[in-house]
Image (cartoon, rainbow over all chains, first blue to last red; front, side, top):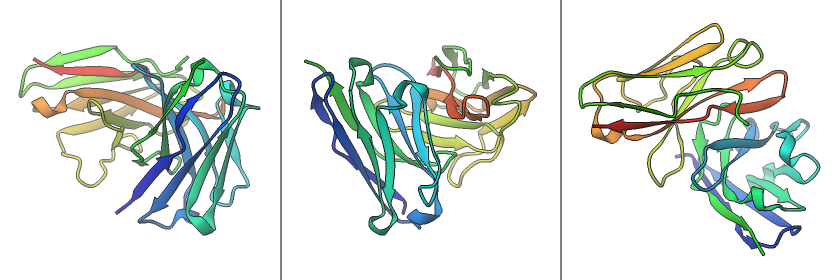
Amino acid sequence: EVQLVESGGGLVQPGGSLRLSCAASGFTFSSYWMSWVRQAPGKGLEWVANIKQDGSEKYYVDSVKGRFTISRDNAKNSLYLQMNSLRAEDTAVYYCARDSIVDYWGQGTLVTVSS
Amino acid sequence: QSVLTQPPSASGTPGQRVTISCSGSSSNIGSNTVNWYQQLPGTAPKLLIYSNNQRPSGVPDRFSGSKSGTSASLAISGLQSEDEADYYCAAWDDSLNVYVFGTGTKVTVL
């Protein structure tokens, strides 16, 4: 059974940093692109970033370029999202998701950016 | 700002057929396959349709997808109360190099 479990969310002040983690199990992690998708409270889905199987290619939505970094550790079956210079508009539930078609999703972790 | 446009809401009575449209452009739907997601209240989204019209294992055949040109649609036949949810289309955009989601459609079963 595919499982994706996010952690690392919480309350952070504007301008602060946070690192999200996603622990993957139930599939060969190193064989799949992985993505982060977020959903602001009461709003729709927004794709944030994805990363190729070996980490050699990464893509980001414009609003997070230069502030967020996606990475992975295939030996630990883990995906990460380093978030710096956080803004109020980054407040959202962040989902870890498998593959470029986003076929499996974690339960999400809430990030709140507020003073 | 989403580049895929969906109607904000759709509704029907139990047993009816409901269709949701998704309008894009040549750089997304026109060039790539479309996926659809269902998000039940308070839960994570779930993949409903992939590659325009393919259903993952476990998805009832009441759900079907199609694509034509720069538009796609999701049809729910034999509407059931448990289908009340938000539905999103999505596709890769070759110009923006991002995966774009639609604006979302809330389906209500009357």
